[in-house]
Image 1 (cartoon, rainbow, N blue to C red):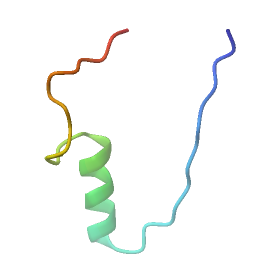
Image 2 (image 1 turned 90 degrees about the vertical axis):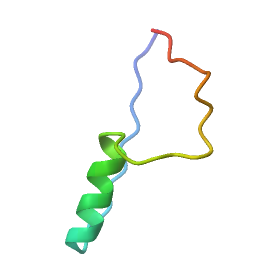
Image 3 (image 1 turned 60 degrees about the vertical axis):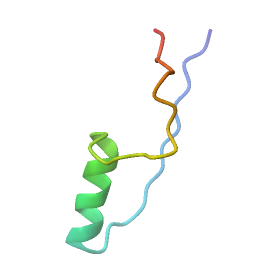
Length: 42
């Protein structure tokens, strides 16, 4: 099987954007529509 990756590049124009991106990447923000019963297998 071939390993694939998706890379998105976007300019972060303010410190608020940098902080929001970090919270998203580190999974620190609450996601109210996420299904907490599902687990990642792997």
